[in-house]
Amino acid sequence: MPIEPFFIIMVIWFVLLVVKRVVLKSGAFESLLWFIVAGVYGLNYGVDYNLDTQFILYGSVIGLLITVFFFSPLDVLKKDRHLVKYHDLKDHQKQLVIRSESLRKRFIAMIDLLKDGLAFKSDDGMMFATDFLLEMIGFEDNEFSQIDYEARIHPEDLSMYQNTLRKLTKKNASYEISYRFKRYNIYVWIKESGTLIHYEDRTMILCIVKSIDVKRYPETEVELLNRLRIDHEMLEHLQSLNRMRKPYYLVFIELTNIPAINRKYGRDIGDLMMGEFLNKMRFNFVKEDQSYFRLSGIRFAMVIKDDRKYEILERALKHGGDSLNFAMNFGGIKETIYPSFGVQKITMFDEPIDEILERTTKALDIALDQNTHENYFVIGK
Picture 1 (cartoon, rainbow, N blue to C red):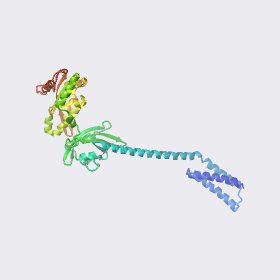
Picture 2 (cartoon, rainbow, N blue to C red):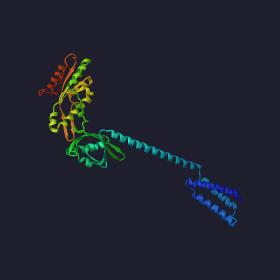
Picture 3 (tube, rainbow, N blue to C red):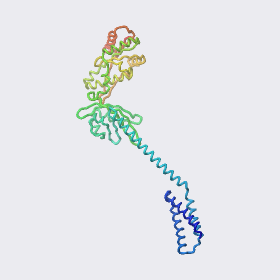
Picture 4 (cartoon, one colour):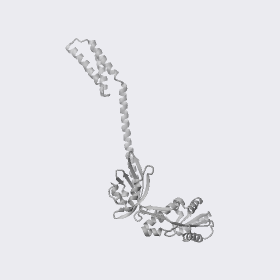
């Protein structure tokens, strides 16, 4: 028997089988065939069965061909490619984890910078609140049930609160409400602005909460009242405008029913309503704080230098509309502010400021007179 060719074939066959078994995890049948051929050769060589040696050689050749036929170096390369792809995916996952952790830390840092409270309301009935919010509402744990939270809302405001959240949809996902909340033994006013978020098959409400209790948290719309300038500053401002010799409009406003609101709900609510009203006026007509002045408790003045802004005010005075109709809902409290306006267009720049103020005051007094059918009176137009 030609031993050398047989051994060469058997060694090559064995190496291929090792690669196939270790790398590709296959080749069980070919391995069994290899052991049969090797066993037959051993029996024939040791016991001298006088088998046809060509038959054994052919058997090894056939076994090698079968292994080669079902073996492709591309399979090994493909296996390597899979390993490379696996490592790439593993590196990508690691980068995602790093980015996610970085985003989480930045989000926490951003929350810490907020002066208002932040809350997450999940659809499983639980809430998560930041430390600022816990300080506002008097809770100790950052996570608590919505039932416990709603139990502290004033009974007159609870149905409004629940109905507002219940009506949120994808199309109408944002809301803004105000309500009374029991902090320890007293009620404070809470202003909540939030939005409904959908993720996968769940929903969550993300909201920013701030207290509008004037005594404890003064950074509210009432701050606009505190920033308004007094009479002598208004005189200086009007004198500077006269020196510029450009026409402008001086508007005196009295919020006539604020004293009644103060008596009914307290001065805090009256101040909040005045602050909200002035914010609305500033948004619609004059955005600069230096053009607003407080004349007395419920009397204010504003200076309009833009003809287009005054035209908006004039249309609102003559035809009504949302620009001047201010209704406020705080929890179960629903009130409307009724303003009166005295207006004067200033085109004479050399006359004394006192005379200008006297005429504008007279225009406001006419608007306040019970015999006047309108809530405004205009001079010089």
